[in-house]
Amino acid sequence: ERFGVVGRYIELYRLRIFDRWGSLLFETVDPMEGWDGTIAGTAATPGVYVYQVRYKGPTTEAVERLGHVTLLR
Image 1 (cartoon, rainbow, N blue to C red):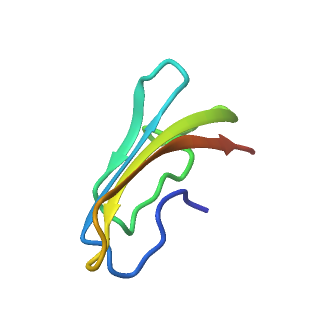
Image 2: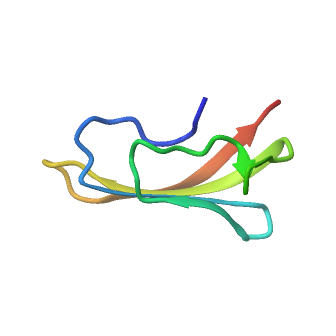
């Protein structure tokens, strides 16, 4: 499974994942690519991570969300 935005017609996309100290662990601008729970190819430690996502559909204004995702193994 991957964490990200699900949508067919996304024109603008940026997903970033941070650890609890604010270090950037993952970033993508490809809406077909979500975070797979790894950091540089190594499984991340289970826990809570912060996400920041910005996206825009063809008929909507840009949306930005900040939240938490819990990684379980």
